[in-house]
Amino acid sequence: MGEVFRARLRQFPSLVTCCTIDWFSAWPEEALQAVATSFLNELPELDVSPTAMRGLTLMCVEIHQMVARKCDQYLAELSRHNYVTPKSYLELLKIFSDLTVRKKQELCSARQRMKTGLDKLLSTADDVSKMQEELGTMRPLLEEATRDTEVTMETIK
Image 1 (cartoon, helix red, strand yellow):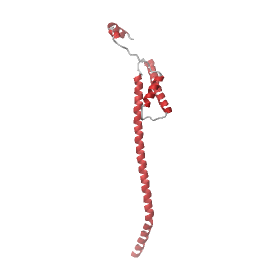
Image 2 (cartoon, helix red, strand yellow; image 1 turned 135 degrees about the horizontal axis):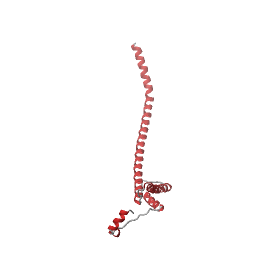
Image 3 (cartoon, helix red, strand yellow; image 1 turned 90 degrees about the vertical axis):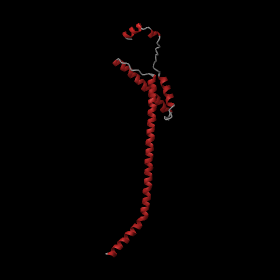
Image 4 (spheres, helix red, strand yellow; image 1 turned 60 degrees about the vertical axis):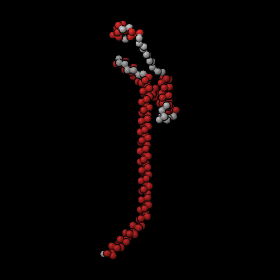
């Protein structure tokens, strides 16, 4: 603690006697895994296998621990505090949840566009085949009309 803070405490002793200091220690890895598993299991959008779920929980735990290590490194290098709290971990899980929902909606939208495009291609293919059939049935009539036209042209000359 700084000297100025100590002086204030001596001047105002009620700061020590009337205040409650909440100390929060870092959650152990097992607790982080349990919270992530519980949180991710409640997401209806996240329909994955148990192996993938385990990987996701370990990923969330590793991200949180990596940020905590970087905060310690930041403190050692720059002598500045940056705190990673359990609330930060819950925010990480919430952001992951929001991203999952958004990406699932984007994928559903893309799938719908793809389905619409495929339906349009199938309908066009059907139309082309019908037109080819019509052309096949009309070809002899067209050839006959061409011969008649040629005969008529010859008689006119």
